[in-house]
Length: 102
Image (cartoon, rainbow, N blue to C red; front, side, top):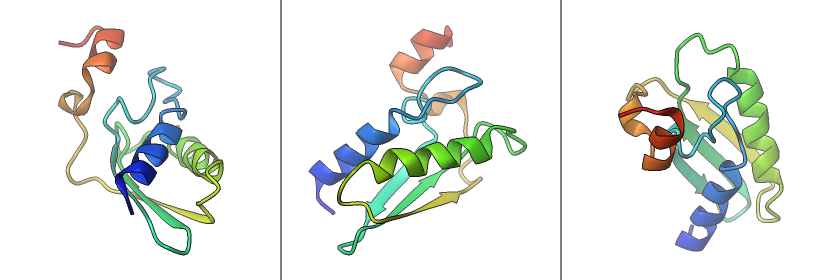
């Protein structure tokens, strides 16, 4: 997968907003990796802000919807991982400023 495709996928994922925090999952640092095979199979490796996140299934559905908007993507698998665990250190400067986190 080339960098342009990676950027397109991450750009699409910036449209997925965590409903509890109001910030997209990329700037929150929830997306650890994206990959796209030559036959259009996308894999997103990500975490959630907490193990019992009630919005998890909704966020996964939104991830799939966002990536299906890209014509290169034919199928999407979202791999939720818990290691490494998410922390506020994963957030972008933008997200930290928006949420008032130092």
